[in-house]
Amino acid sequence: MTGTPTWRLPVGDVIAGGVGPTGDLIDELVGSAADRLGSEGARQEAERVRHRLLGFGPLSEVVAIAGVTDVLVNGDGAVWIDRGQGAYRVGSVDPGDVRALAVRLAGQAGRRLDDAQPWTDGLLPGGVRLHAILPPVATSGCHLSLRLPRVNPAGVAGLREIRAVDDHCAGVLRAVVQGRLSFLVTGGTGAGKTTVLAGLLGECPPGERIVVVEDVAELAPAHPHVVSLQCRPPNVEGAGALTMTDLVRQALRMRPDRLVVGEVRGAEVRELLLALNTGHEGGASTMHANGAAEVPARCEALGSLAGMPRESVHAQLREAVRVVVHTARRGQWRGVVAVALLQWSAGSVVSAEVLTRGGPHDPCRRGPAWAEFAELLHARGVSDLPWSG
Image (cartoon, rainbow, N blue to C red):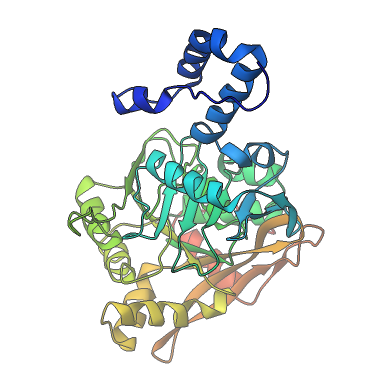
């Protein structure tokens, strides 16, 4: 018998009995039904079930394309991908399949996605970052975004291998970690902030304990002692949520040598600034910003969400964060384009450039704050810097 089978594999009944869907389960059920469906019908039914219950379903082929970093599905079913040079359309899928896939993937990420909770953000097995949003919030249908894991560089040498830094920049960043200067990695979406932060954390001595707090666990530095804490959304009764603020406070009780907040984007900036002012040197975080010079104003804005006046933000920021590492995207290239020192001037924190770099083919140049940066590191026992001697 060929064509679309009129009988369906009883996968739903098996799942309802407490057995999760797997490729082996589907093969077993197909084998038991081959006499009813025929070889071609069994193959089609097995493919249909795999498509609906396993992997990335209708997106499996585009997810497997070499070099893809982002897969974006709009409410009308249009599928777009990004391979490092901007998004372009590669086809379409049934909009109804998109919603079913989003709900299933949310479940795999341990997240809820339904009419009462119409958006979700989570991490799938294998490190794929998931975001999905349902109608009526998304007016044209279910929108699904997948960010595939990128390279986790092993230390600054790993960043050098993927050309995110050149030799001079690598030496500066290595000195920042060795000197236990607290730093922020800034940049826009897709600029490589997480990749750079992971590389710098991989440079930390192996005996140090790194405690990482994230909204969605994504940071995976190549380091032997990393403790990861992840936020939790509320349950169906609206209780049980664990926020970034909650987890930063818990992290401080876990004896971190390095406290890392995956991304500061809200009131948790207060806890981060307080923590980095209580002896936790060498901490780090990422922050969306268009440049290092905008960091003080960005911290002001986030601090206001926590009820912190401007003066308090600057007073805390003065000693909490010493260095800003700014990343940018230039076509397919993502990497560090500036390193800046945060300085105190006339009652406010301001940014001064230590080095700049235009892009992957441009050499690093020292900025006006180079001498002060070198002096600061020398006082901390770090003298092996680029351009020294």
